[in-house]
Length: 288
Image (tube, rainbow, N blue to C red; front, side):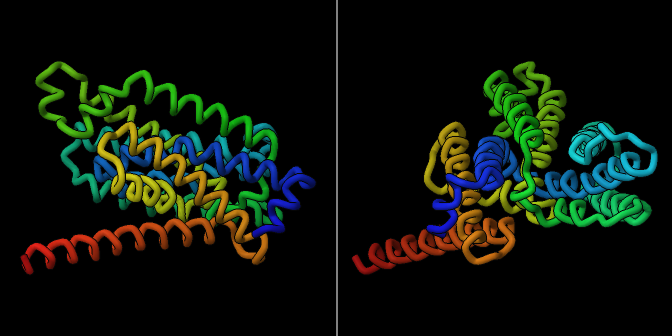
């Protein structure tokens, strides 16, 4: 781990990776708090796995049809927004069960992505990195896009903080007060979609839900307000990504997997220690 911080001063790719993890942590903490509070991690999972379809399609058209400027990350954004729109429409308007549609989109997105990847000529190792993440491949263009997406997510949350707060905690009361609940629910799904795209470069599609929910779940144990939860979750996410990057560099392991392992251990430790503390407290009261 120490070697990482020594080499950080010398190697640009390590600096880019660290900055990417910090930038992703901001949106992760903010939007992840909404996901955990409203208990919609399954929706975030459906959106995340649809992204592979957009990534595969983008690379196919880039290689086969010469769309050189159509980077996979742009396909990821389009696929994530489309999935968010479909899920939101089904939740609000359609009679179909929401979980059924999410499962269908989950499977369809993965299948379409794999089909496009298979039909794309050349070696597609970089596309596979979207599945499991490779933060060391982040370049200057990716960092600029991360900054833009971060800015959009944070700006919308600051602008509509009270509306999102009302929708997350008391939807019916918000509707009675004249808040356009459907609109802000759809907007929340858009924020989730953008955050998923942000996190894919850090930990990949497979592990993105863990990074989106674990820091917020840990933060929720120590805070009493949504704003405080967001701040602490963002700091924890930055800490997890930095620690995962540093540890993986020294051990020559995948950064995304190490990051999630650290986050998972912290989450389990916090919950187990809380249960032990409550048990001891209850036992002490009974003894009295």
